[in-house]
Amino acid sequence: MPVVFPQRITILGATGSIGASTLDVISRHPDRYSVFALTAHREANRLAELCFRFSPRYAVMVDVAAAKELRGLLQGCSTTVLDGGQALCEVASAPETDVVMAAIVGAAGLRPTLAAVTAGKKVLLANKEALVMSGQLFMDAVEASGCRLYPIDSEHNAVFQSLPKDFRRHPEEDGIRRILLTASGGPFRHASPEKLETVTPDEACAHPIWSMGRKISVDSATMMNKGLEVIEAHWLFGVAPNRIEVVIHPQGIIHSMVDYVDGSVLAQLGNPDMRIPIANALACPERIDSGANALDLFDIAGLSFERPDFGRFPCLSLAYQALEAGGSMPAALNAANEEAVAAFLDGRLGFCRIADVIAATLECDGWPGAETLEAVLESDARARSFACDEIRKRRTV
Ligand code: NAD
Ligand code: MG
Image (cartoon, rainbow, N blue to C red; front, side, top):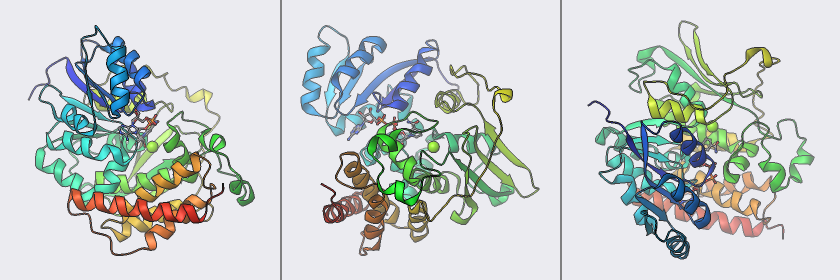
């Protein structure tokens, strides 16, 4: 079917870092894209500013009190304010929306992202936690609805750009040997084990290359972000866990690579700027201006590569273990990580204890499986409750 312009977009998580980059790209192409709905958790002032600028048909605040505040701020404006979690699903699946940017952070994004997938929308997936939690279920829903799914994570978008055009998730048939996922290594790449014990939230969120939300910044510091991305790559591209290799590449210029059996390695390079994968996914197969600076190779002193240190960054091993174990283990891994990171960010848990809490949670058994959405959500809830007990045992204040 030919694409009709302007494409009407719903941005789930519009007030976040990916939301801002998406709106920046969209604002460069008013003939191609218009905003149908913007959503946020509880940042009423920020969402009001965005509504004045982009005039969406709907604004959704999950928090009911914040929605009331937003209604007050938007008096006289044409935007209708909705509230609650169900409204996220409604705007994500509304017939008037063509494209959904899934940029809520964490498990809260699962239901609305699945609603967009089930409704057969073009879905741009930044919310990796949704796919990690529900892997098979999510990809089955993509298959069943014919939804077009585009990865926004820079690594997965790089892989997507390096794969054959008609790739159908059968890597062997296309001569693919491995996926090489690059990682900057985060702010503590060379930190000693003693230093890691005393890391503060602000130090963990000071990423050397990317400016991102606080949860993903901590995930990058523990390398759980790369672990979640290994799981994400497995589901997106159908590649076995032992064929997904993590390569530390501190400059963040090569965003990932595909290694083919003939010895060719295809890569995507670019400045570290999330507007590049966002513009790619929005316009694919066309190319549009993203606002990012052109890459100046003469400016880059060199490109270097290191093996990841699984000893100092146990979260990476825990993610591989959860993926190998399958079932609801990735959902449990994700839930325990979300709780542990939240506790670290508000000073209740030490940085190195994040991995301990996750490891303890994965040792539990009797999870309800991951065949249905209810089972996934039940695993998520149980893992959170278990992880919270573990956090209390290790509480720092
Ligand atoms: P962020 O914290 O900057 O923004 C999160 C957004 O989600 C906000 O709009 C917030 O209002 C909304 N939100 C938070 N909790 C919610 C809830 N309970 N219900 C509904 N909405 C809620 O996060 P971010 O850095 O933009 O990351 C968003 C997603 O994109 C994450 O899954 C992250 O892993 C992924 N991602 C981000 C980057 C990046 O550069 N920031 C890169 C790759 C992938
Ligand atoms: Mg990434």
